[in-house]
Length: 233
Image 1 (tube, rainbow, N blue to C red):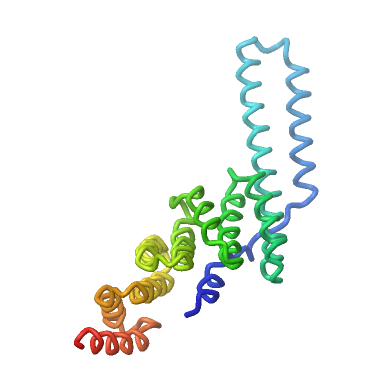
Image 2 (cartoon, rainbow, N blue to C red; image 1 turned 180 degrees about the vertical axis):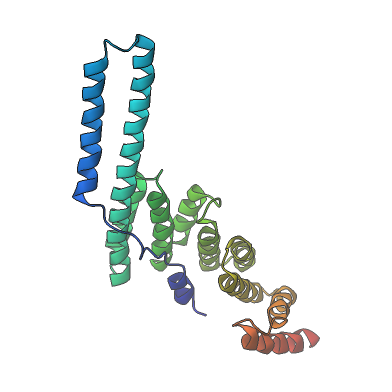
């Protein structure tokens, strides 16, 4: 499997995203105005303490509404940037993704933008920049497997095959998808082989070969035979 193939496989999918309607934004604004009007009209009937409590609740509601709008905007801009990735315009995609990450870094879409930006940087041959960005994202949450896998690819580009293999194994342990987990293990085996650690590579292929249902079963059998012969020499 080539490096570009592995990078392509890591591309995030956003097919289920939908664009917000103007009606939703109007409803949020109207609700905020209604809250303010209600507080003005009932201020005297309410005690100061109650007014304070209601005001706090109103502020929290507005903050949540603003956060919701940020998520929507960030998602829309992320989809637009993803189109640039798909079209092959990597410089423009990188610039757009950085904007989303900088402006909406605290949102889920902002985090996804950072992950996708890491992939674009690798496709541009900038592994050091990618590693720095991936370190900022961290390896917790739903993007953990993608971060580990991208880190592994970046380490391969910098000639650190053994460290890349370890990162691929972390990606395998982190992902919830069985097929993807085995694919990451295979990547780890190839990286171990690239670093001269044939025994570690053989162990992984033997594990995969022990499962006839694996989509990598035939390749695993081939690799086990090759590596066993090489190690015997």
